[in-house]
Image (cartoon, rainbow over all chains, first blue to last red; front, side):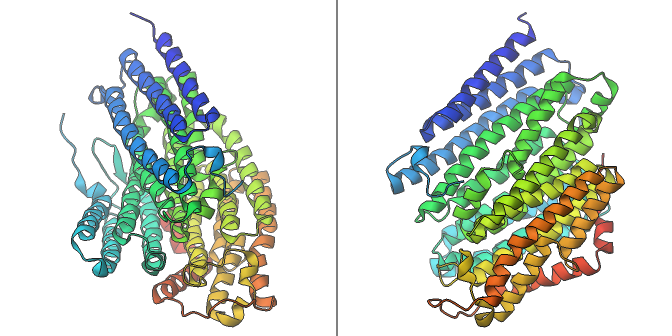
Length: 106
Length: 477
């Protein structure tokens, strides 16, 4: 069996790729893709932990799996709302570049 | 395995969810001229939920395999959230009409966020906390961008969404590590596993990432950048709702996770959170000094208040949690009242947002000016108002648990904050009015909210004892 750290390293790498995408890209859609990658890295982590760690209680033995399913559902909901916002911005500004969305500055 | 479907425990959330469905149906079937009633429907749902939550008081029920509880801590926060939502709905009645927003959808989204908030403060399982967090965040992303004709509102929505989703990913990664380190997502069992086994580095990483997620949601330095932009750009009534209810819900889960599940790791998180509290208070107050836009100023002030509440978390114990709940109640009344005054002083869709727009308001609207003055003094922490007693309890809890230096920095910060809270007051009373503003009648609902806020702030300030007793009920483990 492949040892647990292999999965965790892959998940961490995937999370960092997503993080880089979310921080470095200027296109709102690309940022959204980065965030989705981060969520999927977490899913990998959850399922790997679930497979390798003996659950503390027998009634909770599917927690990791079920959680991953919830996250998938949530990622879909989040993408729907995110894309709706991006379309609304595009209609009013003709751009999805977050650097051009700068009426307010911090 | 028996199914532990104890529906009583989630009854307040169920009632709000039911009224949400009715509001959505009404939006479809009622003609546009009748949709005003949907606001009343939302209000009835919120009041019904509050009555049920009050009836659950003291029973200390838990349900769904200990995933949800109705303990004193959760129910007190539920009531704060319902109060904040009800006052926001009252403020919204005339606001949605004046700004031509979609009435039914607006109330439905507010109710949906409230369901998530109630779930968040009563959940004792990381899975439920995460789902509730998203259930409260997703409608708020839409609400921030709700005024689609306004580019600033859309920009606020996009920024809130991108940073919020980003923070959710960190939060989730943290949950995965806590799950990996302890083998469970139940808060009570996490504490038991951490107490029984040697120090788990995996759980420690999880704790750090969870902290980042919470810090984003309650706007702690250095994860606060989204707050000023989102608060400034979002429609004022949405800002009012967000600034109080989200803070109550996110702090509720923050306290519960750190005090119920992770007290074993307190040595690791206490000092770190103390430093973050100092940075948050100082940056919030100093940045608020520099603002000329009132909504932006209140945004930085909300960051500073998050710093004060974090002191209560560092203090830990029953006093820490109780003083935080009292502070959140005081802050909810005060901040909603302050935003209510901003809405009361607006002229149709034109709002008084810059400081010099407030020049001479006391002559035109003496009552609103007096109310706003009381509320700003309470935010600054002047006695005998609620803001003062709230800070008194929090700093008292910090001193008792040996964090006196933190309380001293908190007091110094309150002194700084007095300066910027008094600037609108000076404008209202001591500067001659500028022309160009119509003299308006304040809408009755808005006046009602202002009256409740002022009476509440005075009552909490003068007789805090019964409320702090209720707030110190603690957790059900």
